[in-house]
View (tube, rainbow, N blue to C red):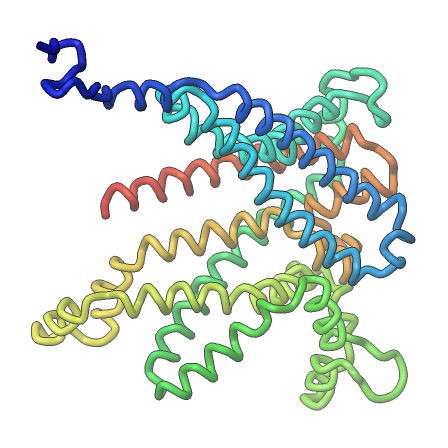
Length: 387
């Protein structure tokens, strides 16, 4: 008689142990690991070589920016796909239990590596250079910080940035709310046309917008005024003005702020309009039944329910304002008391060759942005927890 406890059967046919297959599958597969690791190295090397060739050997790509762009997309996207395929193969080659634990981290690791390379490493280097001399060959302690805080140009730029922070986010959010509410009162077609028109400037670069508004602020010494603002001002009986050269009451800085408000109002309007449409109609109807006016309904029912979106838009625009550079650089390059921190950094680094002072300015800007970023993250987490 066959001993069934040893895997046999009454007919003498051996019985396969199911756990044997699982054990085999759960073992490490060195071949997969090696192929995956080597494949990842080769893919990264190949992508780097192609991108280096764009700058060093453009003739290989017919000296055509279009060809370079197409190849960059193909190599970048295709290379990323092959890289993750090889990564997956290497992780699958590990023992089953290890593979299951490593897999999530393996896919996150390349992203963290890029963040480290593109963000963290430059940040650490900038902080390091802030304590060095102009060509980063020797440390000078806090000399750069002492210089910039004792410099009138830096204090003026800091004051201008504060003014931008006070006015631009508040005005952008305020106009965005008004436009969102008024657009919702239009017909469906009218709402689409109005919102599309107001959102259109978002497609324009800061430099392009500055070029457009330079035509509006243009001043002609002799003859008819070609600048729209001066043409209107002269028609009203005034004298033509060089608007961007008038620092009184920060008029020229305010005129520069108008450009950024014009660009960002569409962004603010779209997000706030979506938030307003998401307010439950039941709460609004209940307020109307209680006899509340439309203004009270909006201020006491709608606004509290879209507060999260308002804060998000406000913080986003605030961070943008802290980094504002293009508009000031193109319109005045910081002259006539319009300079801001980012433009001052650019001039110190590229015009004056003072990398140490420029890095110190960036560190000050980084410190100014950090509390806002921390608040934004905490606000986002609080909103997620409340859902």
